[in-house]
Length: 373
Image 1: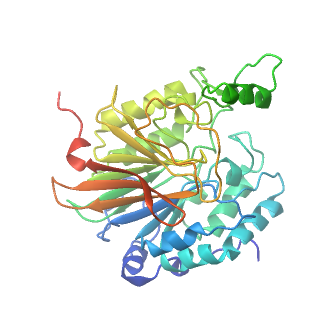
Image 2: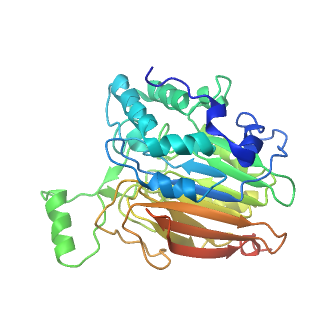
């Protein structure tokens, strides 16, 4: 049956999987901390078109991650027919490589626009509740999960014990998001305008403009309150798994920076809650890159963008916060945590379809601490 619940036990095998299975359903802010060992190797990715071949799963499974985080556009549905959306999930489920991943690695997932329902869609998507049910059924979410009754499918999970405590925070950037603003190009067609920019060797921003409306939001107020509580929980390393880029300065496509007040509110919330040890993951872009925000931030905030598992975009939008090169090939991301007390390090990578690291950055946990004032 299309969209039927996948057993959670099928998602985990081996010693790491068995340990994560013991953690039970997603916890809520303020709940007791699980003593489940924290994952040390976390793979992640986004943008997997169900009608295309997906050879990248072989490299991901071969890398033996303890956890995989799907960052959205896990399918491309783009429909207002819920049966069509469910049928696209069924195509993903049938992919041999994905089946191998699902049978061997625990999975956490969030949606972006194409699996939420439509390109660039937000709170006005009319089937968002039916889409939520299809998403949670496909990913095997418990019937008692708060993700089924909240105003979005955001969640926070905690692993490990003090000294090696890992928090994974997954916001929902669709259910309550205000509609986008688009660039005013006058009478010009965007495609023609973008082609002229590219031909001239100029950066090609996307069709999105900043939304300066003080009431515009990425998360909605209820999710903001939840996020603040989650970031106040004690953790040594935090992964903020966002479907959209967090620190890119202005790519012109969908990103946190399009909502200037919410972008600033996120930075302020990290500062105010003293949410140390935080690294961002993101997807959506159809290229991979690593970015760093070290101005007006409580500590350097790194954002590792991995996209896509099948999708590749030939044009590279501007991003003043990009560190090093980009990767415009099929790719997936990887974080390796080397726990060692105050000397703990995080290796951030974007890998190609064969699993070879193409972008890499090592970050010291000691450098992800709020500045004392």
